[in-house]
Image (spheres, rainbow, N blue to C red):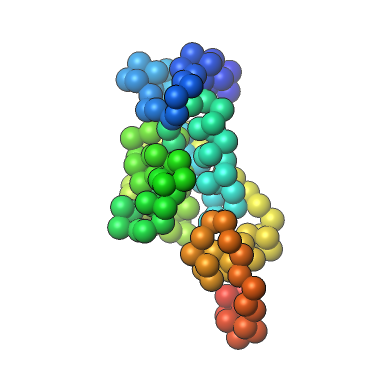
Length: 144
């Protein structure tokens, strides 16, 4: 806890997110995993971490996924990279690249809200938009 806070104060960077230097990474004693079920707030958590610390956060997402490049475009420069200090993963729901972490933070959300949010994401393929369509058969299949 306090070691991370001290390190974040030490490497505060005002001109956008950057990667940790080797000695800074060594002070953390390994990567931190940010683990959650999809649509539980891990992307928002990463944005907040990057804004507060100035440090780049990554994800184990495949570079073949179009969403990786959309998230990079909104400012998450480490999206799809695993060489950052904090790595987001939706494992085991989604299989990303294998990596070891020294510590993990689990992001949790009310499951009913996460399921509904996933519905909107699947319908719009966007983190920002919501869907107005509610075909009963599709929704029923989604929640089962």
